[in-house]
Length: 260
Image 1 (cartoon, one colour):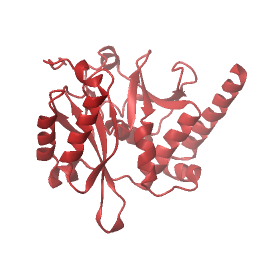
Image 2: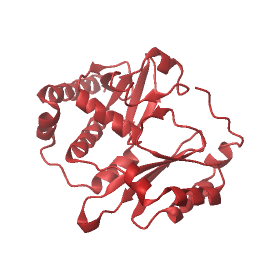
Image 3: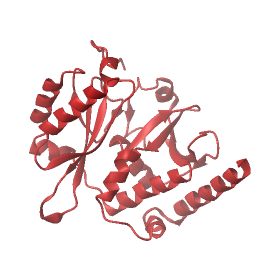
Image 4: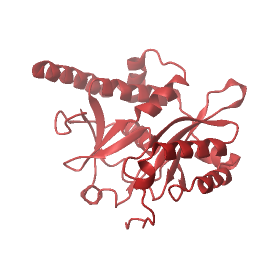
């Protein structure tokens, strides 16, 4: 897949805090009245930015959410849950007008998503594992891994068949535990496609999936609490799934004790 030719220097934008503030103002000015920015983050090496929008619902219902991507190049993921807007970095008036045109009620309905109780307990598990220095990884096909981001990763066709692993956050070759749980893996793919997880390439064709904490934590504050987390996870994903991650946490604690 050929990279999109960029006619401007994106580093002129990403390095300037004032430009980021101007973009945030442009986004806020373009939002409809029932939407506001809950979180956002900026790519370090390009003019891409990601925005988590919260959409208020009537009659006290739990809110919906929407992932907005503003970028000067195409995303390498396909079948993702993101509303993507293309812009020329630094043209704030144009991107504001584009957003006003795109953020219609019909578009918001199409791209927004509701998080169920299962989503909440799954996201809480991901954060819980991270506290124990554990993350989820997938083993990509050689073609996709070798091409880095110049080959599309289809979250419907490629991601479910990738090998899912639970491993050490700081050392991807340490304590890799294969986990076969298709329902859980499907949810991980959805969160990746919504920027609730972000990726890092590593050796052995592995893709590390780390929680986007600055998104997940404020998001969970807007949703009901989930008592009896481990019990709910066992009902949802099975006792074998719980046993695997509990044992991984214990093994991680033993390794930490040895190295300290």
